[in-house]
Image (tube, rainbow, N blue to C red; front, top):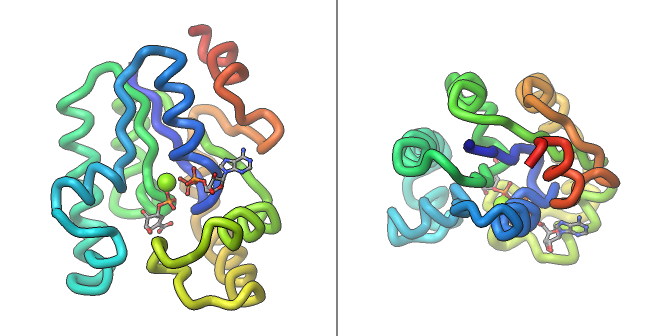
Length: 168
Ligand SMILES: Nc1ncnc2c1ncn2[C@@H]1O[C@H](COP(=O)(O)OP(=O)(O)O)[C@@H](O)[C@H]1O
Ligand SMILES: O=C(O)C1=C[C@@H](OP(=O)(O)O)[C@@H](O)[C@H](O)C1
Ligand SMILES: [Mg+2]
């Protein structure tokens, strides 16, 4: 079984994905980390040198490669991954998708605490700009996230809960 975590930047996909994979004994793949290894550049460098459109093509390729390489895995995607091309269909055809639905105020708090530098779409924004950017982005992305197999509120987003929900 493949489990995909989807949702906004800061929703906890990388963190929860790693925990869940550990509990299941499944391979864990973070799509951003996979791309960094594959390209030998940081996500910020890929955006800066080759642009977002190129990043989105690489992200789709990475998705296909990871699916082909692993039948049993927890795959944490980047926040934009399900929202480009027909990626959400591809994800749902190849596994179970989990949407981490976290309020914007919570995302802002976590992202500011972590620092914005590693996320090129957010770097340099003031707290107010971050808030409005995330709110606008979510308005557009919601339609993709809501196609997930399972949606979890922040309070429900634990590895324990997911194991129960997935009958694992
Ligand atoms: N459930 C949670 N509660 C509080 N902070 C969290 C939670 N999950 C993740 N974080 C923190 O929020 C930040 C973003 O988490 P991350 O897993 O990188 O999110 P994503 O991969 O969805 O962008 C990190 O600093 C992480 O430690
Ligand atoms: O939402 C986005 O468009 C992005 C999210 C990031 O991943 P996280 O959601 O893990 O931060 C990363 O893929 C890139 O910076 C773009
Ligand atoms: Mg992540």
